[in-house]
Length: 402
Ligand SMILES: [Zn+2]
Image 1: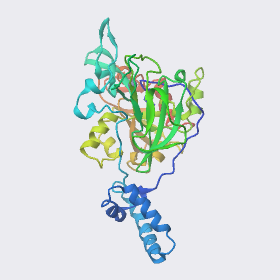
Image 2: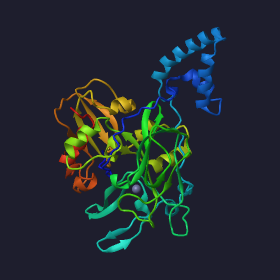
Image 3: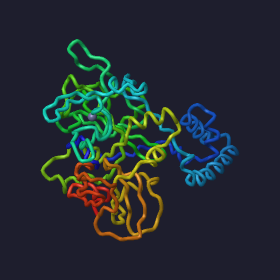
Image 4: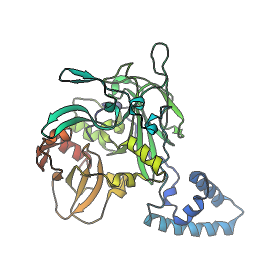
């Protein structure tokens, strides 16, 4: 919904797949105390499940059942303690990110600023790193890049990239786009992961060959593709993998798309980039290096709201179901949704005021037109803003079809 740097038309008509991973998050405090002493919680949980199924240990079973029921109750009350570990690896051998070597890690972009050409590696980072514009508040970067562009480490004699692309975490392949022309991402793969009960989607773009199929379970660091340069605005010299880690906005995306993009076919179903909101994955890698038990809710909690939009109450507001940790309370007659500047929703607060249409209730002060700050989602300046038509449509996707 961020209007992402890469908007991907295209679809294979895949249905959403909510992979049925082990409900470890529901296993509460007591179990975690046991699991913490094992190297691998997942294995421990599997062992537990096997133990619970063993036929000859009936009293052990009832004992474990009683504990399990107790833990279920405790677990839902203490989600932070019962979190899954976000165990992610980089998708290629390039690990210069962890050495702070930006130029070695990020693929550069070709910039032409009023005729002045340059190749800044910074343009490969996540965030507002593209399309600079001079303003009364200095240089403003107006175009958002929703992922990170990781440079190849190996090329053949012709300069073709050879890097293997690997799954960043255990998960299930939910989308493969094998047709380069069906998306700005070129050939791409989406893998669904579950942490703390919430679904997250890693996306690997500009691939050459793809080695996985929809429905396939993959393990962390399992090869899924070979790096390429398919898609829009990329060539062999700038070959890279574009990597995102996303929240999903709405499983009824196609209906919204048909209404808002009637001219433009969607070849990628709900895994169209517009329906996937990327978080700052480079920052997440670095934060997890410092604190391996960090959860995504904790990671997003300290974000600064660039703007807030009040939306009507709706049973189709799917973010609250997928990411219930965004919600700060119940009651109210509408929701105030906090967004980063890029349009990533990360907090939802109840408001006592009813609204029939989405409206901006807060925006960070700036003398620069908000169109340039928010990729055209807001217009106005100096703390007064309205949703543009694009902004209104993007906001409505949150609770479509209401
Ligand atoms: Zn990219």
